[in-house]
Length: 243
Length: 328
Ligand SMILES: Nc1ncnc2c1ncn2[C@@H]1O[C@H](COP(=O)(O)OP(=O)(O)OP(=O)(O)O)[C@@H](O)[C@H]1O
Ligand SMILES: [Mg+2]
Image (tube, rainbow over all chains, first blue to last red; front, side):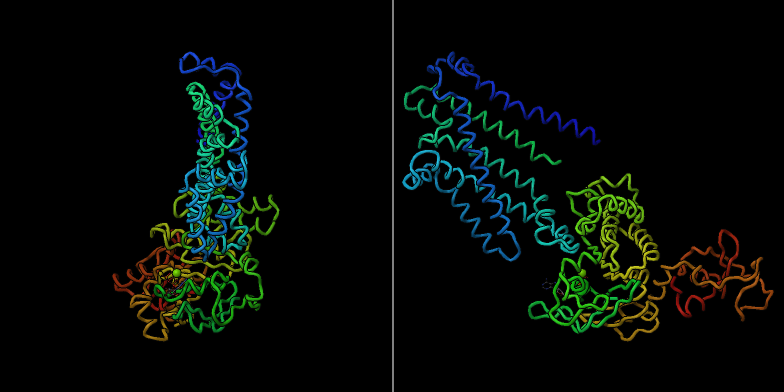
């Protein structure tokens, strides 16, 4: 049975590499224009900066925001789920929830006067949006840890820190990772808006395409962003799988 | 030895435990018995400071537990809870190894210890070592819980209704297994239960609580034959003596035969030196309650007790009552 599960896992691993592979193929210069131009939606030539560069910028923005979101969100979720902090938890959930009710464009526009144009306001927006699923999932995951296991951990003589690292976080891990996955995938889409602020990334061909009424250009950005989102989702499903 | 001195726990306005004075002797199993809500769990958790007392003291081996770090105190005390509380993300071996790991014990020695303990609680190490708690039956999980509590070889074991969630058959088996384990290890055990049969069966002593106070502390015989109050009598019920007999093999009450040919009852007053054995015989493994029932049914005073068909002793109703069962 164990062996069967392992082969199943390996098959899953290979399937997860399908989207990243497709993405890489589309980034080979000339491949994507070759596919899109025949559709007659417009004309796509060589890109400056090249598509792989836009994709890397985009990926960099998303991953950086993801790391910062984890660095902020996880400690926050841990802090508010300690005993006798129900009031704090509700406050945090409200504040984090607010981040999502304000429209993306508004967050970005508000950030520009403070941070100027470029990648900084975009990063801020991505962090604000990315926090929501990470914090709320982490809170749900940590609160869902079985009271029996926690009581046993305390009774065995684990300190608060040991309980957190040895029991709570491992048990909440799948739920937390699901939150990170959602947050990251959403942010691939959100980051395209950043191009309007000069952050670069895959939003650039989309915005240029809109202003030049060149649908093929829009399609190029959209296809790459979608492939990037699917790739990240697939790669992260590998981490989320129970081991 | 665990001593409770004027122990008290207040939750809001109400006292869950009040002025509790008790001594749990070394190497004995004390059953903490009482109706639901009488404060058994609270008392147990005050011993390892999962609940902080609001008054009084707990001494462990003469030392006030307040002078110890709670984590250090708890690592020296085995703890089994009713919900079992195995860690679902760790396999059986890792679960059992929890406290040795916390204490920084050598990995290889711990692995050997884990196998030894799984054997002890009746689980084949090769089969169960790598299983997850989710793959275990209730009884198996409970056994792992007991093994985990014993892993660091603590002198003291606290158990909160350890067999409570099991069906009667599994409970009987596990109680038997645990009695054998305790006979070998001689830990100082405090076992919370509201099951009278379990308390009488496993307890060297029984502490009967009522509404946060100690009602009576003594051997099962004390409670059955010398109850100090109506509450004790009523709680144990009119058939308490029978229930106690039900948990013991009749062989434990018999008067052994003397002589190599085993034909002479060893007790004066049961007949002359050459008196014949009673006509009705029972096996020594039969429970004493059933033996008493046979006495009543046959209208006789004594039975022959046999081992594998060979007479090894005799037993009369007087033996079943007299001093109560001797405890091994
Ligand atoms: N954390 C708590 N807060 C408030 N009251 C409590 C708390 N824990 C226990 N109590 C109260 O203290 C009393 C004793 O509870 P305890 O759990 O010790 O009973 P018990 O004898 O173990 O009962 P049971 O057999 O049902 O487990 C009960 O009235 C209970 O409601
Ligand atoms: Mg209880």
